[in-house]
Structure formats: structure tokens, C-alpha cells
Image (tube, rainbow, N blue to C red; front, side, top):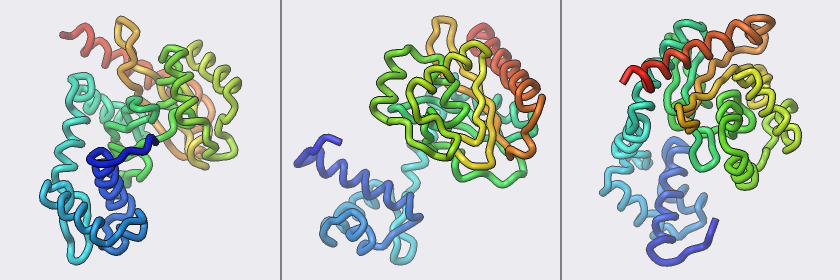
Length: 254
């Protein structure tokens, strides 16, 4: 990250404080000062400003992210018609597959979950809306990479790397290239416990008529349940059929 001073440095520090509040589910002034290595007075100043802007609020002696964060988050999730429409299709994908379903976009080289659906099943922390994941280790992310121009894939790999998440994670660029070619040939990506041990997933990209990548849909479940023909044939067909419906409604239904 480029070092800055003055107003830009203050913005970076304030954002750092806000992220720390989220990651720790609330913090005291002293904890913010310690974790971010800043004087107590500076930490208190940032927190007070965030509270004034409703980006943070207090719960006892702790500070937590405030309601304005939700406002911005909801704006991001629904600012495009394609994103708004994806919410209902994510729910439909869960209902048709029986597996947790998500819609992901790529932003700043990360895979960003915009929508998720799991019915009455407990939600997973890692696929909540707003959560970021490495694009090379999840099915939804590999699906997106397969549809991006080679130059953009190069930029993402160079900036974000190929971090190892499990023993099955692809960490070699040549292996990733070969994997993406398979995804392009069959039209969908598989995640075989590459991001979290015990979790498999199937994902496919959504592209516009002019080739622009809109995002991707995917389903995920326990590896000991998502097996055989269901994993390699039935679920991919379910995901691909849903994407065709989505594209018909969004790109043609207008």
C-alpha cells in the first residue's frame, strides 16, 4: 500500500479503524489504539468522528460499526439491475439444488459475495454478503477468472497472488491456467476442497452478450454429501440452466 500523509493518511487510518471494529465485533478505545499502533487520543478522535458520521456507534464501552455501513452495503448490493435480479435467482438456485447458493462479483481482484441463500440452514460465515474470498480457490471465483481477459487475470494474480488455503488449493500459475481452460471448455468450475477442507462447490460465470463478466452463481456443500454424478453432472446442469434463465430475463426480457 502506498504511504501517504495528511488528509489521505487520516482517511486510511479511519477506514482501518472501521475494519478493525468489524473484524473484532466491537472494540474499546484502548484496544483500537493497541491493535492499530496509534496514540489513545488519535484512536478516540477517529472513533468519535466515525460515530458523528453514523459509521460507528457505541455499545457500553465498545465501538461497533454503525447503521451508515449498512446503507452503503445495501447500495453496493443493489446499485445495478443485474445485482438486484441476482438476489431472487440466488434464492431460486438454493431451492432447486438444496445447497447453499451465492452470487459473486470480482472487485479489486477479490471475489465479493453479493447474495447468498441457505433457507433455514445456518448461514456460513465465509459466504455472507460482503465477504471477500480469493478468486483462485473458490468455484465462483474460478468461474469469473475463466471469463475474464487474460490481461485481467494476470493483473489479479500479480496483485493478489495464489495463497494456499488447503492442501488442494491451486498455487501454481501454470496449473491455474490449465484449470481455467477446463472451466472454459465445460462451462463451469469445480472447487474440490480448495478453499475450506470438507467443502465442495460448483460455479459458473454470467457474461453479457458483449462478453462482459457480470458475476457468477455457485452452490456449495459438504464434500461427503456432494459426490458422484450429482457433483459432476447434475449440479453443474442446475447452475447452468439457472444462469440461462437469468440471462434470458436480464438481457432479453428487457
